[in-house]
Length: 243
Image (cartoon, rainbow, N blue to C red; front, side, top):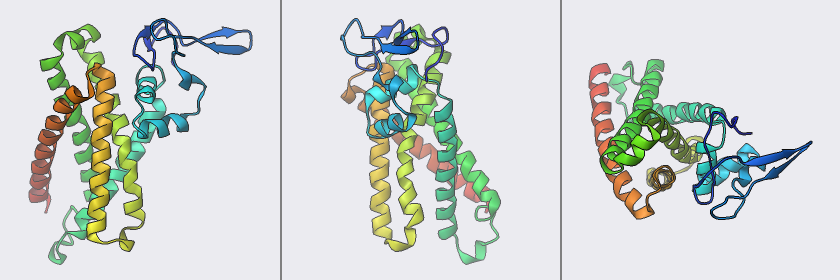
């Protein structure tokens, strides 16, 4: 359920206050612990199944984000992020194939090697977003970053980015039923997924930095725009090199 107490600094999922423990063990039973600051149950999710935590995180629950980032072993989320990476890469690869001219059917971008290039592109997207957020945090919240430790803070940001990217599971319907919708309908679907992803990225950044939502949005949105600009140019460069 959770990591051992000597490897993880627990936090209250309601207010973010650090707590010594999440539960007390009595014989064969467990009793949840209340936070000394807000007096609520420090972490109700220790009694929940992982699927409920995942669903709540996709519903933009900051409590679920805190639990996943600070109070839980993240191994399952890494596995889910790998599955999501493959899904997103397949979607991108499929789009490239659909928009490639007939005389370029032998291009590396449309054969099986193109899928691996799309995977590499999406990994760069993950890492670039994390790096840009780290730079912005260092510039605006330097003391907080140094108190947590640069390496630890960067790793938490990477995990936060993974949680925010779970929004892209909503791309699955457009993959399965792409032939049953119009280009306009598909564009609307992608726009909604992008909007949800941005909201998720903002809220999970709030959890990590304890900023207000508006302050976090003023950081995340420029970072996202810069990241998209860099990734578009990188994508164009790859197409020129491998076409």
